[in-house]
Image 1 (cartoon, rainbow, N blue to C red):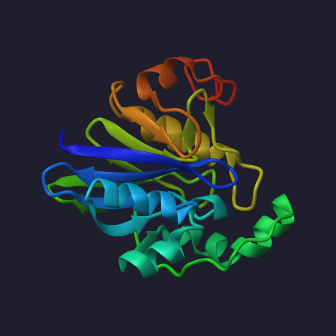
Image 2 (cartoon, rainbow, N blue to C red):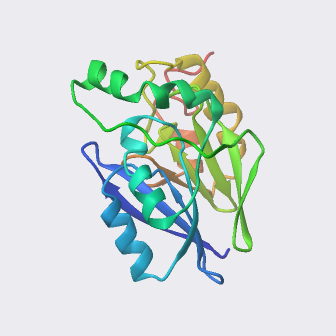
Image 3 (cartoon, helix red, strand yellow):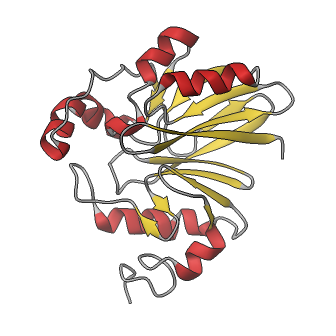
Length: 217
């Protein structure tokens, strides 16, 4: 497997911002440019990476605040799932009402990703998996051995669904019927907190695991 990654913890909510890169070509994509653009740029420059695009797993403010700065500095496009356009456009209003804080105007997307799309990173490929629930346009990015899960699946937890556009039934369906169909050995790289693996989550996740409280009998 030639696709590797770096992670930076960024912003007020300590989001994970990933740089996935091909070890041969050094071509890279940024997944969830949440904040602190300078940290992301330092990593790119330190490892002589060649970023080609920014992708969001979803459009809550803590996953997109560094996008505009990075777009201007790196001259790269920004992609989201179209079902999250509304959340992106209403980001300032939603963040103010939900958390009582002010955030900058959001960056405009340059294009969109859909279920089954493939993101090419050098000689490697990331498959787009649409996983609504945390937000309508939440997606995960999957390559052999790695799953960038955004705020859909965490170590021992799942994304919250009480914010605008959230849906508990949909997030359970997304995890159980899409993510849990992938191999147990896959490393899960979530939007917050430590990594995990799918095998452990299938067996032990208290919400969606074998005996999870959100699983239907």
